Image (cartoon, rainbow, N blue to C red; front, side, top):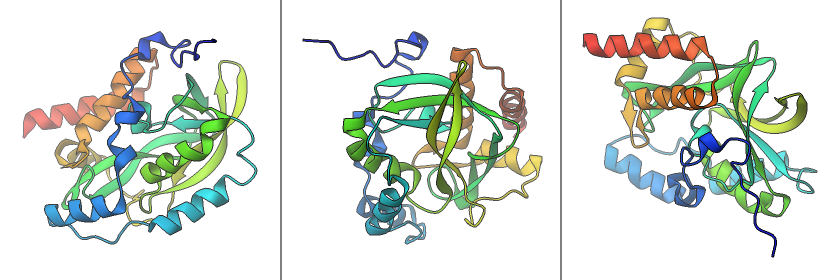
Length: 243
């Protein structure tokens, strides 16, 4: 019997650095769980999409895309906790886009309305490095349910197909870009606000600072030089030390 392919054959340095999808918090998350969590934390609810709305968005996005493998581009927490099963992971670059720290989290994940957190969103820009995950054709239907549960829980992102480059090869990949109509996407944040939210925001997914540190950790493992992330991390950690 032929052995299953090794997802980390191209990047053995990532072995053990990406959470087991089957053990991911997001894989078991339901809207009922989320409502209970919001009540427990004393936070407002009903900001998320219903299961029916989310499934309709998934079905519309995947029209004509179920007859082959699916590449998914991760630029933030997908890089260490994708929540879906994959058969290959590759370092990749997406032109004409950039990782921007413009997601002001007030929903409880990594911040609240009283103490907002901050995460990244993919927006227009000069280019973005990250990871591409390949979902096998026969698993696309099942695994994208978990992907949508993770990335389209509420308003923040728009599911979009972009060109991603692996070495010298271009592939079409699904990713989630900033939805500028969403309340939590804020392009007016000052640098000082970004640093403060990263330093102080925390929620049921962990702290905003750990989120930033995890991005930097993945880049260090892959040898990616990203001065924006490195500088933001240095400034945020300096701010934490000053508190």
